[in-house]
Length: 372
Picture 1 (cartoon, rainbow, N blue to C red):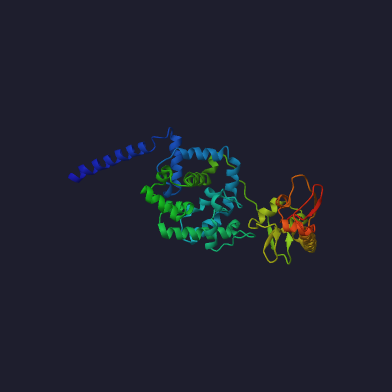
Picture 2: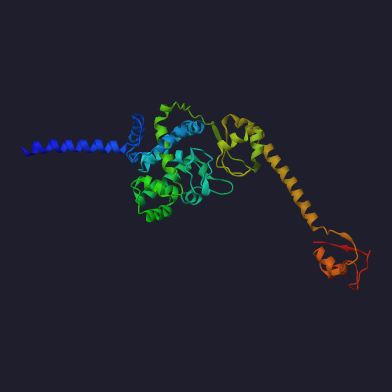
């Protein structure tokens, strides 16, 4: 009997509590439309069930209005590579929510160059890229290779999960570095239960990753609500070749009749203007026959240019080795020490060059000097 009385009472109290909590949670929103906006964010993944932040609407509005073109291009490239990124995350037992991270880091720009020497769609630092098996040097930067950089970035994220085991700690450790995040947590005594606390603390160097990540994740799932027409991404069909001799990359794209931008878009990893033998190079498939016809001429142009450059270098060496001679006419007040200082030579050399037996010189006398 007592249970029948207490149970409805407990249910009623719980209902009132939930109503009050929900009202307080969304009190900063002005309309039901705002509430729906945040509900949509929460529906994507439990990790996004965070206290509402009005600035998220500002970010979304910026991306769909003033930055609409860039956002459309970012989503276009993202949707093309999404299956591979998602598959690699699942294979490594990582949250699928991380698939949206490159959108927030680089807007899916294949040749992205960020601060602190980060690069590629995953904005990988050099030391992380090399640690996880990517080649980064003056000629090749595999951070620009979507497939290889995705594997490296996800391996790094997997190791961060071993360290932290918390989604937001992993994401912030990725952008701040583990030591950076650890130092911030010590200062703020915050374990990132709510990433917005760290966002507002002022300690994060890359705090914009939090609203960027949430806003791009939201748009990747609800872009149709904002009339964002995302066309299918159609990359150029490519064929991989290898040169047998060195060539200049401008000679290659000229002989293939393609623009420099097109060549770089299909070879984002290539950093040098010199194409070296035995390194894979991508060319448009429909230019394969044209390349075969002009391959020998590429090597010949390189050889001719090397002869020209060698000739210039030899001439510079010859000129540098030539003894420069000037004729100096002695003026009133001159003496050998003064003249020697002017031309950065020694008095002994002036006397030697001019067969002088003493330091005495006369006004109007001509001296041969070989300045350094």
